[in-house]
Image 1: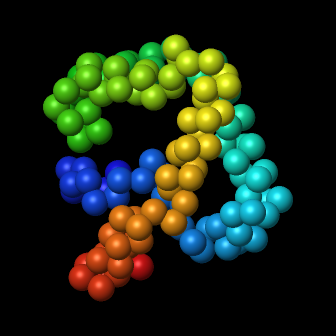
Image 2 (image 1 turned 120 degrees about the vertical axis):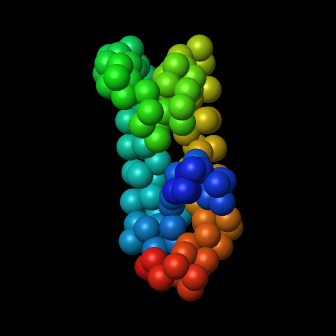
Image 3 (image 1 turned 45 degrees about the vertical axis):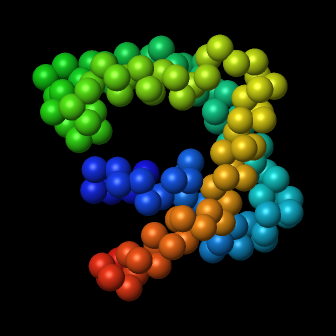
Length: 125
């Protein structure tokens, strides 16, 4: 998500730029296929540890409810984190979900335009 109180300019699930994909020899390359596989394996492995991860965040939350990452609603933020693990989904559904996230992030036009804005108006490269 975009900085500055999540203004919503960058709506891609994660940033996957043309340059990053080019380093992997393009979206149809073996390297990019390996990237997809590693993303999937990582997601499935993180799901196995969902409760430990959310417990750590809940421990951090105590006394730090005003941190920007909690947006003033720490319990809601932790619930949102748990929901991202898609624990109610089958592994097969997660495969489709991770592939969807990658496809939505690949050359996302809003990310490209936000980067262009950052470059020309704010000087961020």
